[in-house]
Picture 1: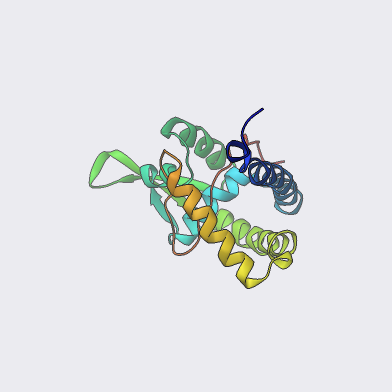
Picture 2 (picture 1 turned 30 degrees about the vertical axis):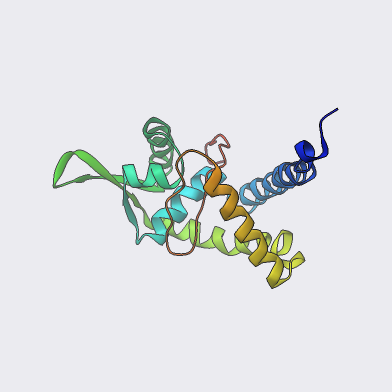
Length: 170
């Protein structure tokens, strides 16, 4: 049997994993129900909108934690749906920008309102200000100890693709 010091972290780990899974399932369902978007599409649109409408493909891939090929496939589907377009970089023929379209901007702004309301009710309303500060501090500490790249930050907001497969809009 493991020593107490070897398993002292197990209840916290299980709580994190279980709550993340439950919350993420609800967040994904709410996003699809209210806007028809997957979280992957919302993630791209939110990053583009918050960045002023356009980001380089390398920066966008890093921000949403996708490989270049994963982002390319997602953008292909989003371009077909009229949500984004790709613009060549006039300074570098090998580079391009992803730009949000008026349809994509309208959709993400509408989705953001209902998404933030849902997250507030499902997550934030149950926590006191001190709890939120503690949780942020703890998650930052955990994040700093996990190897690998971190998502790029846009202001004080970070949107992370959770690896949920993207589906075509209905």
